[in-house]
Every structure is written in structure tokens, then in C-alpha cells.
Image 1 (spheres, rainbow, N blue to C red):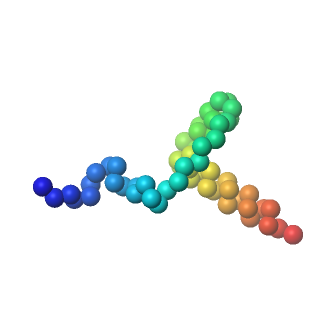
Image 2 (cartoon, rainbow, N blue to C red):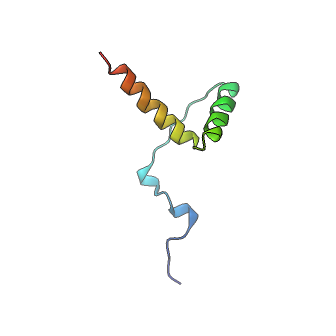
Image 3 (cartoon, rainbow, N blue to C red):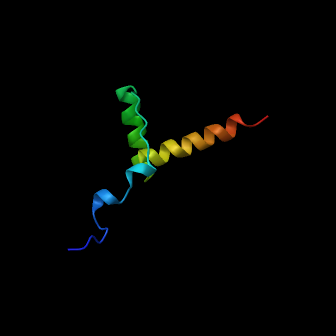
Amino acid sequence: MSDSGSNKNSQHEPEKFGSLNFKVDPDFKKEFKGYAVSQGMTMVELLKEGFALSKKQRELP
């Protein structure tokens, strides 16, 4: 039996991703997750977008 690469666990190779582990207030988590869902994006996508916007704003003279 050959491996066709369709295994869900093989979609993201572990060596290409790292973990961010931090705690947030439960109300913040609920609001953050709800906003991400309402925008049709994942929490990771929202975090990346927010980080990019923050970096861009802070780099302004």
C-alpha cells in the first residue's frame, strides 16, 4: 500500500511550524475567536494580519 499523501496529519509538516504558547483573558479569547469567525478567517490568520499591521504602523516616522 503506497502513501498517497492524503493523510490529514501530513498536510502541515511539523518542522515548518512553531508554537506560540501564551495565556489570554477568557473574554479576550472569546472576542478574538468570534471576530475571526465573523471575518471568515482563522485565529492564526487574524494574528498574522494584526501583527503585520502593527509592524507597519510602528515603522512610520
